Amino acid sequence: VGFKMFLGVTATVTNWDAEGTSCSLVLEDNPLVDFVELPDTCQGLYYCNILSGVIRGALEM
Image 1 (cartoon, one colour):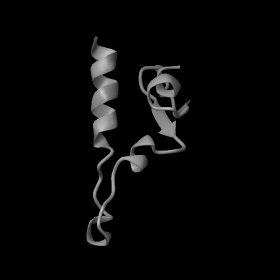
Image 2 (cartoon, helix red, strand yellow; image 1 turned 120 degrees about the vertical axis):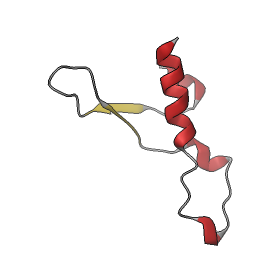
Image 3 (cartoon, helix red, strand yellow; image 1 turned 90 degrees about the vertical axis):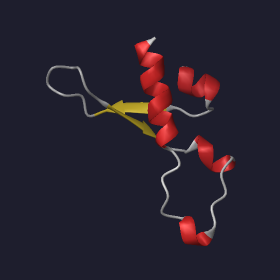
Image 4 (spheres, one colour; image 1 turned 180 degrees about the vertical axis):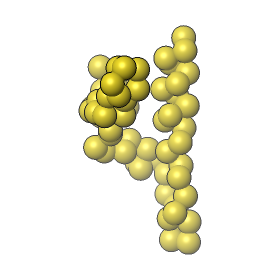
């Protein structure tokens, strides 16, 4: 619900480990591409790492 409310996308939860303590969140659409424009020479940059920081911070609260 939070992803849809704040980012406008739906996340899919996959790859749970055997203990049920680790998983992957998959975003089909990247909400940041609407706000970032990279020059052709910088297309290999990973500007989406901020999402993992936001998720971690939210889980620690």
